[in-house]
View 1 (cartoon, rainbow, N blue to C red):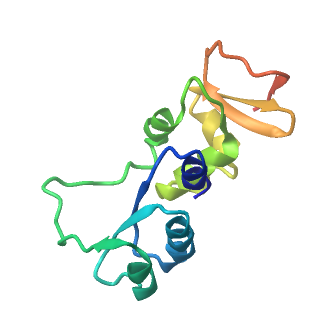
View 2: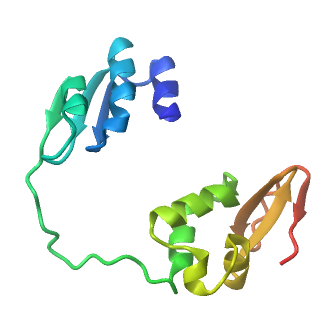
Length: 154
């Protein structure tokens, strides 16, 4: 939400499309409209009325069934997801990684690890390092260094 507001304040966007049926976004939509942003909502038939009414336009797409079998990655494939999340040019905190993995339904305990850092270390593909009080992750061998970083011990 903060990214959207930053783009609005910097006058980089004039339209926001929100794909959600969750009424928790109603306040954001109201604020965006007050700032002159055109808002389009996309959601299911059960979308909360306050969200639907807050948007300039709300689209109820037809229910569709995927043509191919879409399955979530197995617990043995977290590195595929991590590879998609990590950007070599920008640090990724261990906390942000944990949020992304949690949103994909992946948790360290599913792989028999008590912490996210243990789990990531067990993959032997990533390095966890510390910058001040924040732990970050990157692929092994990246030359891009962050000021005052200290590798964490596994």
